[in-house]
Length: 473
Ligand SMILES: [Zn+2]
Image 1: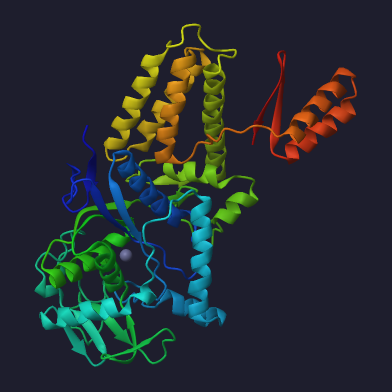
Image 2: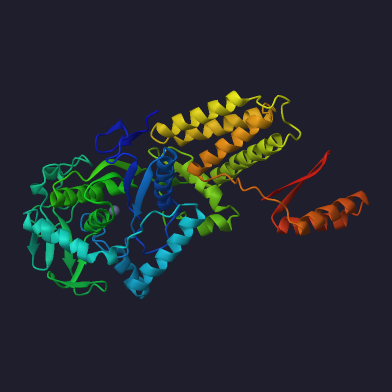
């Protein structure tokens, strides 16, 4: 079965083939660390994680690089025209170096909570200034860039494929429309590789003057090249990265190396909140802390961010998160049922291999879904299909074991199931026994109190005719 991906460069679904057999070189645009990342930012980071995990499931060794943009990027190709970290520093009176250091730590903690695996390298832009300068100088030498005072610009007319990724045409990029008016530039669409400004706090003394700092685009080109080489397989980012960021990366990298840069470009659509763009004025720019404050877990949020197809807009509301939590409970219940069936407890079919065909079908459907441009809704439907069979007691001991093994592999990709097998330690066992005794003696006050104590330890009890079962919340 072939893994097919939608390549933004060709605007078609293509079979994936890596440059080197068995190895994938992948670069993911990472966060700009000037403030806490919101859950919308995390949609694209969780997607990058999913893609890496799926490639690993397929047997590839994935060399994944996700950068940290820890120096303000120039936004002269967009409306804002200001560097986010420096702007935050001026607004709050904090040191920009301190802001980016602290926000990097916060980002890493949030990413870990969301089950995002550590990439091979998380390069920081501030630690790659020499590599950027090397590329800027090389681009000047080759006639693709020019210096105006202490600023350096890329001349977009020297790269005929400029605009291929985004569909923008150089002649349409009028000054004052999507690009800022700047008298220094030869062409309105030219973009800065290196800027100088004595007011900038994060700055470097180079041959381009004492007050320089890099353009955002050159940061990613230089970090990708340093850690993955001149050519890479996959480059990802959010839909807002297509233009100008990725378009400019392609121009710089390909003009510098003379080779194609990335073979596949994948972009995640924005997360919508309450059906629209999240905004400060609506108060719906949520972070992981907001999600936790409402009593939801990072695992539930990961599910909420993954459950849609990455090229479709995805909506987030608190009601949706509640539905997601319920759906996830269904999958937790599936695991619990399979575990009991695998132990030959109640609910198992007599024939050990009963239902094996359902396990095989679920796995085939899961893989087909993921291979079809990472169609997570289809892959998830395969897991819920297994649950319907489990509810009807279709699985015997062997097939339940096989289903659990499959869920383990599927979870290596999705990272949303709780498959850790836990045994209650003696203290908890004793409390449960004590509570059973209290119930038998009709001492309900004591029984309730013990139930609450267990709940505080994360143990949830379910009373039934057969006695009591438990699970960890
Ligand atoms: Zn980037």
